[in-house]
Length: 458
Image 1: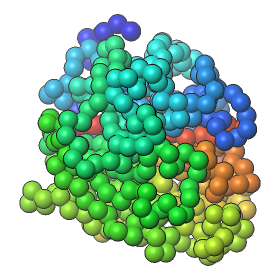
Image 2: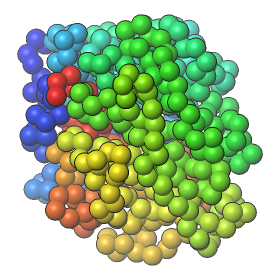
Image 3: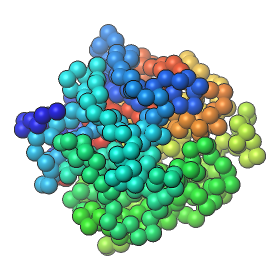
Image 4: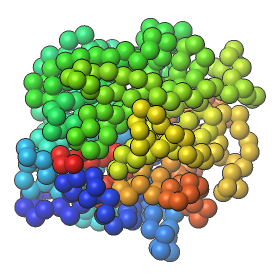
């Protein structure tokens, strides 16, 4: 774990330069057993994503974690292109995966440089240390900042709020403490990201752990799930402003700022409308010094059959938009509809008026039809990861263990599918990964991807 002063070749000053990087050859995938009835530790799978390789689309390595019940979810890198920002620290390299357990609040530091297909754990940060130094539990988003490693948390040590952000030291991985100095009325937490040159951070809301962990209860939607985003002064670590994204909307999840740091705007997905179970995408932006938001996409619920118990009273399938991602050139927005079984591609050349330009169908609630792979898929498209050049989208299918079991009670078998997004938008028929009894969540691409790095130069 020594410090190298050689510049990491996977760091780029701008998103435009990062798009010129060589294509990824390996993908790291978080795989979990929580909710499956299998009592095994979760693992990080190493998948060969090089089309010229004889083991293309195969799991060629893995690291089993030492404990049962972590529930791997989101994870990230120890360092990335933000290191090239004016306040970046010297000597960092993209070497370690920082992998939190969503249920356990344990953090694993995993070395993938020494042997990329045979990762090894070099440090375990136990939940007791996280709780003692921050008061937070249930860890979620990981971002490599120029001054430290930021990790969001859903709640406090009792499973209530407020949730927030904690910081790890870049070099020692020591838990430094809670990030917020003045949170104001912020209570719910989920995702976060930032615009580093303009000095702001934006965070979103799901719900506290005690509300979500045992599954969704419909009666909780109106008053226990969030619908706001919060804007923070990065330097003062103080909340500046909040926006409500429609009183009828609930679950403000993934935040995707535009990668060009001169553009003070981005997108967020609202999972469900209390009015009609539709999902929506909102644009948040700064106009003449004031934060504003505007709904730019609405995706309706669909009539359906074979509904799970939780949806039978409504007689429709909600789209359940649970992830979004933006290509590095800020030209396309990719949207996963975990309920209706679609991955959508929107042209966002004008971010105020996205244009739907492609749809790929992958499973979905009550869907038994085959797809271009000739397979009947369990679950639906959930997590998306976009390659740096924007030409490949990797899709996995687990949302959250207890919620998986509610919306897909017939069982959810983990898979990973690749969509080609160059001239066409369709499934790569040569790529399919079956993770067996394990469920698959977030993917990270070796060398970086569209949701891991921050850039300080346009």
